Image (cartoon, rainbow, N blue to C red):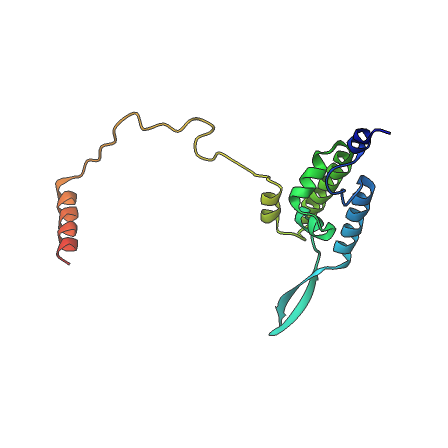
Length: 160
């Protein structure tokens, strides 16, 4: 047998830590862990500090840490065709959890809006028109008595 044929059939590089099925199972494990392990925050009631459990959100960073992969590694998996469907579902599950949690008040809606790159932009000043410089110069007319008062205030501030 020709040795050059054997060399070309060998895979180069480190094997992937996950198959698509294993990564899907790891996400399910992560989602179950998140819901079973709330975050505790301290609330003050009648002068006493009481730890209150609060639902923990699903996050991409949290999943990557749970799976012991970097975000860069997640993106590399995501770029592979065999992983794209499952990782799209992972992203959608995370987004749905965050959005639903914000809607019902479990999570801070402002933070979730930033994380999900959502924005409520309203133009309340120009009605969608471009901002332009004033076309007419603005002139202010003061009567002589008002001008004297303004000048005297200016002189008083300069002396002090």
